[in-house]
Length: 222
Image (tube, rainbow, N blue to C red; front, side):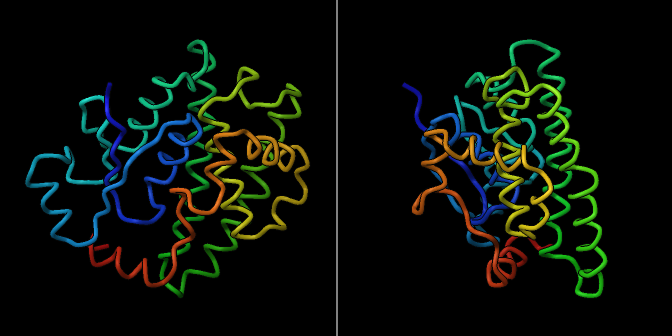
């Protein structure tokens, strides 16, 4: 029997968090090896474990996969969370890209220069309430189903729930005009594997604090 996937990343959300979410939603147990110093990262590079000298990296099924989207695609395919045909996968990919765009926009606020914070925060709020959330509310309204694609759980439902929780942390009022998305959030949060991941003590990571950001800067030199 194959061992558990092993996730290599900093002990924080970052680009690994959506991978943790997807594995958890699929009911897959995983181990984590945290990069705690520049030396840890350098060892992974020197040992030839990072194809492009970057993390996240996931050891799974005898492979050492890098690049977040490639890792997500593999996990989604392996655990049947990637739709039933090419058309469904195209929708899943399209929706996922939008979700990742907004996730990145909100995430970047944590590390943007102070003199840009106010403008970038305003832009992120505008994009959230006028571009991205209306698009997903419209999808749910259009087909009237419980899930975004194919009326069954796929990776994009997991990605959207993760995003909605980040939006809540960012500014909970942004969700107020979107009743279908609020219902979606409650519905997906109640799925057994997801509910377990949302409980205290899981491998889900909390919001970054100033200390973690400073530690990450030292390790990854950004």
